Amino acid sequence: MINAYDILETIRMIQDECLDIRTITMGISLLDCIGPDTERACEKVYDKITRCAGKLVRTGEEIEKEYGIPIINKRISVTPISMISASSDGDPVRFAKTMDRAAKECGVNLIGGYSALVQKGFSAGDKAFIDSIPEALASTERVCSSVNIGSTKTGINMDAVKIMGRIVREAAEKTVDDRCFGAAKLVVFCNAVDDNPFMAGAFHGVGEPDCIINVGVSGPGVVRSALTKYPDADINLLADIIKKTAYKITRVGQLVGVRASEKLGVPFGIVDLSLAPTPAVGDSVAYILEEMGLEKCGCAGTTACLAMLNDAVKKGGVMACSRIGGLSGAFIPVSEDAGMIEAARSGSLLIEKLEAMTAVCSVGLDMIVIPGDTPAEVISGIIADEAAIGMVNSKTTAVRVIPAIGHEVGDELDWGGLFGKGPVMSVNPYSPKKFINRGGQIPAPLHSLKN
Image (cartoon, rainbow, N blue to C red; front, side, top):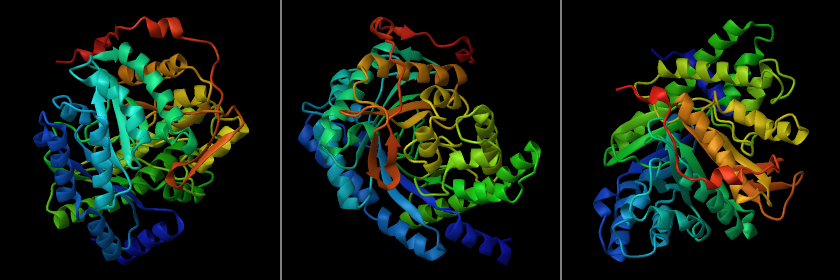
């Protein structure tokens, strides 16, 4: 039963500790839009998106007023467009422009799904589609893109890894006048999930229903505030506090998801209980780690603290919701986390340490600005390393790096809003070019044979 104390505590978390619903994301299947005529297929894509999501923003605003819970973003994810465009006779970028037009009509801030799944090889049209990604991101405002290049079951497609190093650079180069923002809307995955509500990596998996609502919660500020009340607690007590706090945060997500499902008349999918930070002061995963006892995020002990935080968040959240999915854990995007930005500026947080942290966090190397002269093969090497962590550990990992064209270490790119700002971080200058150029497939690990 909900009592007065619970209500007042939730109000306090919203007002003082940055608690919010980060996103409600409507997933929409476009499989029924496939056809050989690109113009007709695009018309069907636009009609399907606007028909299904036409009331999404208004519904989110109504729920905000009804419960007093901020819902920061209303978003859409669609079936990977490489599947839709493969049978069409035209430029895949036309689908991106159609998605962008539909997103603007619906009023959502981002739409994901300009995506390809090539973990085991390229199907018809995949290479041409991937080559179109930089142009698609440069010529649209709200479209996000992702490519899955590996999985625990299949291994890592190193031919795709090589291509994606080039694509990331081209996405930055084509948007150099917009602070290389194209690369900030592009994610390279290993073990991508079908029900991720967070951008830029969201797409609507082929095994999902025709239309569904997924919710992504936030709440790093709430967790940090809870920990400040116990400055001398041991690790066991800290874990218990985090679990109880994650439970409360996730209950809010469950409430919003169920209500949105009822009002829109579509199934409720999952709550992704990831702690998603923002550049706002106090809404930081790095500050949680420092509250645990680190002098600065990135110092020795950071990976251990993050592992404990991630585990406690999952254990607390899973008891609060009937449907947990997505990525679920703790995000560590550098530019979107005030504490991570400070740690990177100070030199405490390096890319090598971030890579170690990705072995125990929710996703991977996220929103990291690297020097503009970083070669494509070095970016490919970063992608390969991160994919290897995901493949071997049976977890989702991702790379979203932004080559800051014309900038070097010590400079900064500032996008504003939830994308935040990031210092240009140094990258190991030695080259993996010969390794990347070998191509082929890194075999799946032995523990993939579970059937």
